[in-house]
Length: 185
Image (cartoon, rainbow, N blue to C red; front, side, top):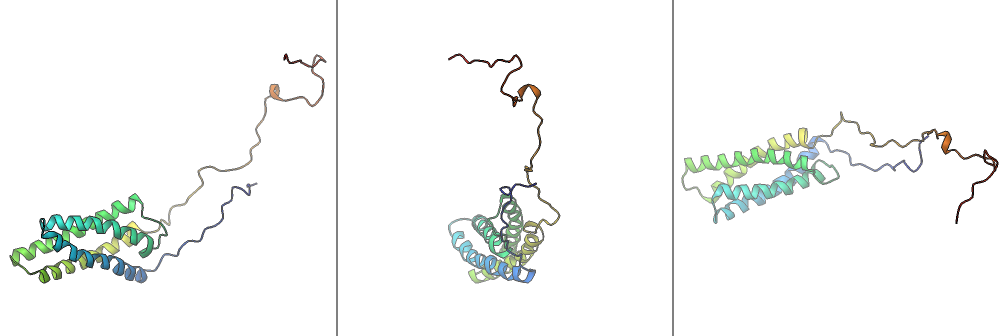
């Protein structure tokens, strides 16, 4: 028999959105942060090398986007954990490499490109990398763990424990030698 105290009330869970709704949210959150990042990278690159600027902005935007995607895009209803942050960082590293290579190739082909040309190349590479990232995040990082079953760490149930004969108290009022022990005060 289960104890009524051991039962927990059922909590409402958010339904996982479908792929189209998730992609729209991904574009809004990830794309919005990406557009803001595309302005921040060249501005920060005026004070340091472009690759360093891109790395700093990529780290900051990845942390923010992972939280937004966990809470809203893939409707986990909670903050992202360490596992999601590390896996998301892996996909962001691939995106960083893609955008850096794209801008590097631009600078090889055209040694002094304008800021608008840099923006177009950066956003194009970010869009392609972002689409690949969505697929990785949806199918791997934030995928529901359907195969896993959870079980309680402690099962609460009533168990009959035998008490040794020496510890049992006699229901009678007399002791075996017909006298009661007296306690010294």
